[in-house]
Length: 115
Image (cartoon, rainbow, N blue to C red; front, side, top):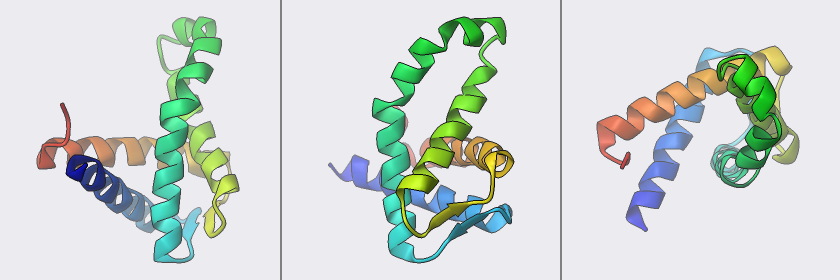
């Protein structure tokens, strides 16, 4: 349970970094940051595998690069689901999803939450 809370905190920290780096990402309050992190995580767990399976031919043709588009779509969808979490457009979502994944991975490795 503590590993899950630590991972959530690290992902929230990663999302905060992304918000500070990309001008098209805005989060109004701290509660919205935590909720956005939770929604992104839930979408990645439940929706992403279905979308990856449905887009498998395109993903194979692009050698997996279409996964970046799927990540951006999930990031953009989370901005539509969470009030107070705003993404300016799909381009901002694309860059933000890439940086969020990168920061989240690095923080997970540094703090030992990756198994």
